[in-house]
Length: 289
Image (tube, rainbow, N blue to C red; front, side, top):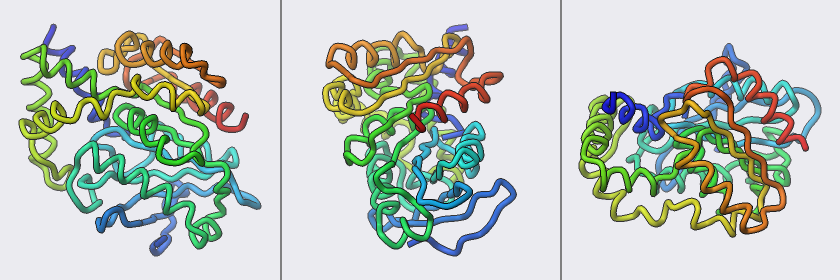
């Protein structure tokens, strides 16, 4: 039983829902887009809002190792509500070049912001650069919170079951069974070079333990309190436990006087199965307010 829970906890890093190139239509209404992050070509999908723009735009950050499509249908849903959505594969995952690390994922988010704000791209994709937001799921939830600090243009942040890497590092240090399961999971992901190119499980652990303080989200509560923050979780989520990853940040933001802070916890697990339409409703309302 303990082993199964540890595997679920490990999943938070690893949820598979995680110049504008030739724009190619797809069945979900998105177009293929590529951009560069530290000399690595990253690929993603852009879901354009319908009508006369420019439109508010969401950077949708995937879990790990992410995937090559939408996350919970949010790209399609938000674009129908007059909100552009851009999602991409982190460096070293799927078709994106380079090597995966949490540090490169944050750099990729920063590069994505710069890409969308560039005059040519903003005009061609009808982006209102004064209304940029980010929504992240699982590993991407933590990246969304930390990465939003790169640019004051990111005024709204939605973290869906967002994980804190500092907490994961603590589990690696204190729980041998978790460490073993987590390391094996990383090794399995990186065994498929079409999915992830990285350091391997053991070296990834060593890297995280060395850098864990840089990914302590609660430590950045004061800076985050100036943004509009929406934290979402699931009471049955054993991958990202609300009590460990979400409530401590919510309390820290309260103590820092966060002016626009919301939390919603559903009676569901990490998949949000059965609650995805409602999840979309909440996020649309938050972005539009």
